[in-house]
Length: 201
Image (cartoon, rainbow, N blue to C red; front, side, top):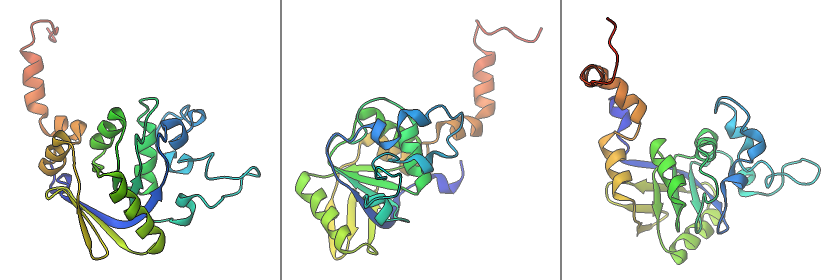
């Protein structure tokens, strides 16, 4: 595993994405799931709600905070279907970390698999951060995975992160595909020892 697999902190400007129960069909509409790769998913992030009836960009936060890398969301974000396309679209748009009140479990696990820290705080803390970002669009927000804190302006807040996610990010084992490739010889040896796998002879 390369050193850059170890994710101890992420930072950048923020984008508030307000609303409870924002589901994966809002994040990435089902009509775009017919594509065979994730390459264009950034173009489809919140596709419908970011546009007016004429198809023009509206004042949705993702239109106003272009270039942001820390999403700040409310309760039960990423609920609905289990589609990996939703966090893939967020990552490809530029999101490196998320601060929220709570997440759907599968969405949070998909974030972990992409190396995106998804940390939680209470309603008042999250809404205060969203308000600060609105007032300070160029301000930096830092998620420290190891200390479980978020720092913005002159404020540092305590946040929670799932233990499994924290360990995977800090230890650099969140990318299971890369992990398997880096241990290819061990995988091959394990397969060779399985009695139900046919050999070459």
